Amino acid sequence: MFQIRIHGRGGQGVVTAAEVLSIAAFEEKRHAQAFPSFGSERMGAPVTAFCRIDDKEIRLREPVMTPDALIVQDTTLLHQVDLFQGLDTRIGYLIINTKHRWDQLGIDEYVNNFLPHHVCTVAASEWALKFTGRPMANIALVEAFCALTRRVELASLQKAVKAKFPGPVGEKNAAAAAAAYDAIRLN
Image (tube, rainbow, N blue to C red; front, side, top):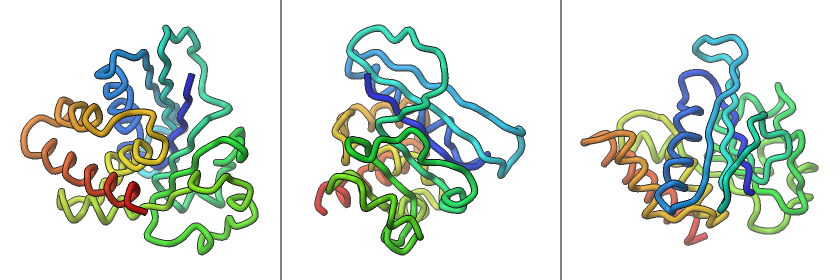
């Protein structure tokens, strides 16, 4: 089973990111689940969402305490919350929404313990703004996750995005996601 934990703030699409990722896994005939964890339910409050993907039925229903991948949508959370708790740097993946390199974020000591190519910073907000006109980084970050881990295929995620957001919104988000995917795969 592959477990993903996504951190962000209310209104940033954290829950939607987990849902889209699980729909993409379903597209590949795999088992998946996605669910959120809210503190105070208000815009801007920290939000965590979880996604599990497996080839067999998933019976767990508790929050993901030891993720295989961690997606951080909002860098303001890096030094406020213990985001990295439970992430094994020897095998885990870390994807952060920022235009800065990870060594500019003040987390060098932690990140230096990861395997090469298991840490990725992606300017997902900028990709989203360019393609959709809104800085909603969630879909581009999920695509970066797919490019880095290869746990879900690009075509499956594109289909899931278009199912979740039919019409022009889905098309624009799919374009932003494809751009993020290409940027990660080419580096």
